[in-house]
Image 1 (cartoon, rainbow over the protein chains, first blue to last red):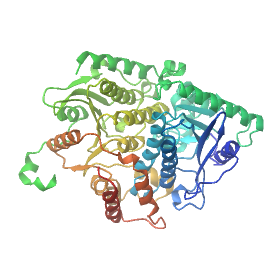
Image 2 (cartoon, each protein chain N blue to C red):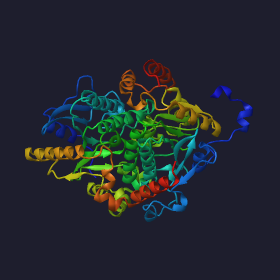
Image 3 (cartoon, chains in turn brown, blue):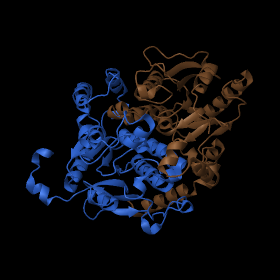
Length: 276
Length: 291
């Protein structure tokens, strides 16, 4: 597992939009821009480190109070503007360290802030916007719940610097009273525990894994390839239901989420049996 | 509700917190109308725990019950805080998502079905890490759809409270009901102390924990919609009143401009006395929202 550096978000945001600055009134930690993507104009969003941020526990790439409400604002703006027109694709570029772990954040209800961002992304999806998350680095814990996990389609780079996980490795090991080494060992046989993106891909939650030689310095052809993959994911989302059922109907899920499928099938049968 | 509270009522009350998850769920229904779905005898349990030396539970720590409340079709999903800290695994998570989706399908067919979640949970079950994590994202997605049709009510009564990703589910719901013994927040005090240091959060300072995460504070800040005593009958009355109220005009998690302005007005150069936020937030909220 590689250390979080917090540079990949800016690199990819700039690759797609040609710039990397926040919108007026927004904190420097949230980048938002509209840029062409295929035949569409798409809205790109990214959370990046901001060493000069107002909140001390949200300066290093964490999703804090300001980041979450800014994301919510910028996503809702798209929903409002496109109410009676073609629904703009929304692309969440994801490289987030974690949520902010601070007393101020708890006092001012970061749980609501993160939910507001997830609400915005989820509402955009339900309104018919194709929402695509591109995981270029870390996608950890509630930060990913707020920024990316409500997407119709999730794409990630097949790279050792890419991690999608419920909790960072050190904290998880501490809580499970295991060493980091033994947790890593366990992840080799139990895919949902693994910090390897290829194991995550086995769970059937990803739309696609993409290969880029060095995600910190992508070449022009690689950027073009990734853009084409985003366009394909947008097309696929536009031609599919707006819910998240594709995650449980994937080939990976048929193998790895057998218990989920059994739970769902049995519950539905018993629900129908008892009537109203 | 507390104005009618007196010693006699306190002595005669049935504690809600002392009830098990199954008993809590059953208590909320009109008498004799509830049926448990996918109960312990169906033995759909976690396939991931035994291989890690952890004993699974036959209902995976999640109780789903369907019946009537105030005469209306309702599903209650109760997380069992006594099993692995109420953590969300693959099966318990899917029980929740599937129950919300089935309620949603009934509403789409014109059969009104309300949903209540009893959340006593620390969030993701780390033994099932990414599957619990994915389940929470799906529970959130299903909550967003269902709350368009019917009020989705979340109760956190204590003593586990509601933390981690599941706190986002509570935040997405239509109404949150708490007791003084309950806590609601994203990161628990221990995790904050370990991540950001003891000067940021002293996890042994119990008064501080309750001052920030406790039910009284969350209600006073407008983050919970009812604060009830530890009394099962009061809990039933709160649930019935929110069912009668129906879907709110705007959900709290969609009040982005309001909460963004409240955050912008804060001075982050210091830690705040949680009580000062009660006044400013309550005033700001009542000015803008008619929930």
